[in-house]
Amino acid sequence: MTLIAQSIALFFLVAGTAFSLIGIFGFLRLPDVYTRLHASGKVSVFGVVFLLIAAILLTPLSAWKGLLLIFFVLLAAPSVSHALASAAYKTGIPMARVERDDLKGKLEKSGEEG
Image (cartoon, rainbow, N blue to C red; front, side):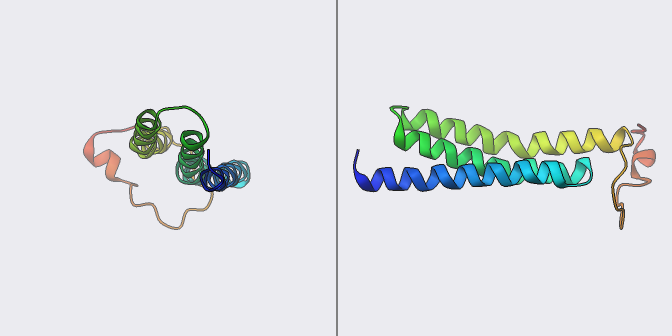
């Protein structure tokens, strides 16, 4: 493996680890489930993608397997975060600081009472 490929892989390894740590700190420090889902749903996904890119470059993992994993992570992460936030809202978990609640009253109108 060339020095350039190792340097690129090292960059993605450090960046992926940094994004994952930021996601963990956000998950621990943020006040409620909705903002925690933002940290784990956005920042940590970038960490996983960058770590998979580093794994593709550093290991004998075939590139198509790594790209397929990246595709499925990017496909599933927003849906999972949305489903968790929707379930939390429907079960009545309160928000830390409510400035605006666009869903209030809409669940009763559509017949999806918690």
